[in-house]
Length: 463
Image (cartoon, rainbow, N blue to C red; front, side, top):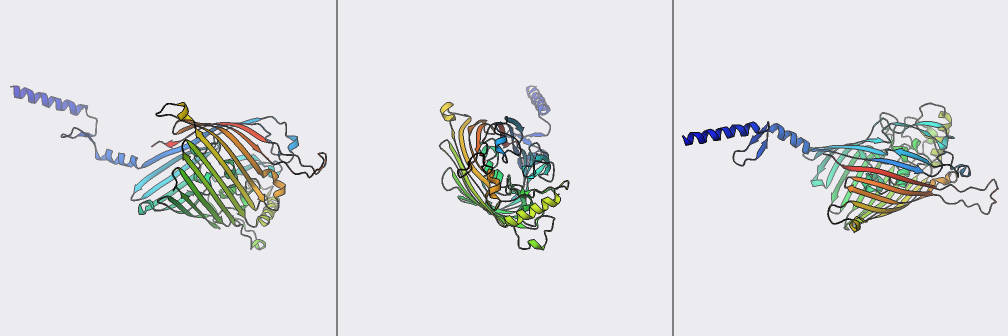
């Protein structure tokens, strides 16, 4: 009787345990551990191969200088203009990646820039202040990356193809908001080059001990979109549903990590830019290529609570005078044509940018040992000039700019950074060679441009 009662109790206990077990979970009778069903195992494996992340910035700025498009042409008329403020979403990006196995991976990045609109109305200083709808990308949402990668030789060699980042200069290779102290991306590199620079192409890259390398074959830039104030910044964009590739280009980057905490990178770019459009320029320009060469050196140092970064970029643009004349002739011909997406501006033959920023993490001095936040106090100096030389350089002295900034970066958790910054952009005083201030040849100095900015950023992985 006792044996029967014991068997009944064990049977009832087993039935109760089975009733309480979640649907689809199998109980291991030996270990008592739970196992997933084959369907659940497949789902879990798929999720483990998926990557979802992103970054973004929300910014508030107060500029204590004139916002007139004409402030550089007659600076004396705008010296006492009131300040103005701006709210902005510079970049909001979503990264999605997937590991297919056997060394095949997918990467993508969808970017919403300044709210995500593909067109913007701007007041063009170079075109007498007229309103102009600039088509800055061929769609309302910008696909900044979309590539397939095949890993070979345990990562020593990779082949990547698709829409890829062109890692020329520090700000293109390291453009996420936790990779620079300022509220906006470093101003100099973001002005003279596309930023973030991305194009369709093929990349060979890998890591060999303390060296990382990348060589790229790309579609060329379009010289019709170069400008005096932005050099080649807009050259990678296309107003069409495709990117014209009459010309090709190459990019190369090498980084070294031999010294602990120090990374030094050297990058370069070379390619023709003229005729990379749907328009045929004619035989008069048969010898014009618009060859663009860029070389950039940058470094970052992260040790002993210090973060120091610096860069120097130099660019040479051949046939600048001929292409400037061509662009001006086309602007005269097409200035009344609605929807014209190009700038048709004078262009410099050289551009230059350099910067140095340093930040010290004071958190160890203020917070106890443990999971403390990061609190960097930083300063930055930079100089850039989109018209460093060229026939038309004297017409654009205001493109030679200097900028100082200092501020704070506070990260309560690794993925979030709150930034505050005071910035002071200034210009060289003109050499008037003793001319009287009432002389018609006397050049007034440009008004300096201070500003205060606050931003909140995130950068992290969600899955």
